[in-house]
Figure: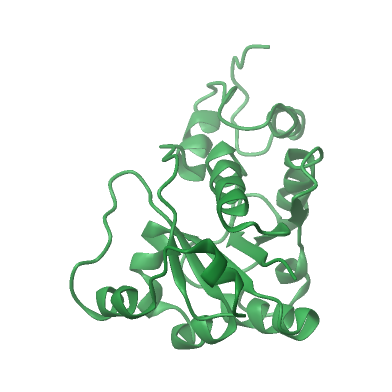
Length: 217
């Protein structure tokens, strides 16, 4: 079985940085598909601005023509905090021995030791780390040791076992963030070309994030 990718986050809103990173890992590791999993109650961030139903709808709109992506709302349906390890446990029960690949940005990876049951993550999945502008791989400490012990550069080796390896994807680094997009929208500026057009139109039609401004058409 081809590996299954898992990419969690707030997607508040989804943008091309999310989609390009997930697509590149999908190609590099030969993933069958990537589940995009919006968080309901993230433990390390403030509560999302847009409600879960709208964020999931925006994801569906963003990937409507991308059969390699799945908008997965399981964390929105689950009560309690949106712990990644619980999502991976659910997927492991569903997928059996299929390799799972958890996609994380390098900024998230640098905070991995603060995640709930973080040491269990590599028992459940591989990690695919995507570099971000301004962030560098750790050179000392627990995460540097983990990289040294678990890093693998061979996609076939990652696909050959259910979990346990770390793959660092040296791909396109896009300096776009949901935080920056929310600021753009709140100021009345146009997010055109930073996100799929279907998502942009949904945001403008619903008034999500923005104070009504002079956004051009």
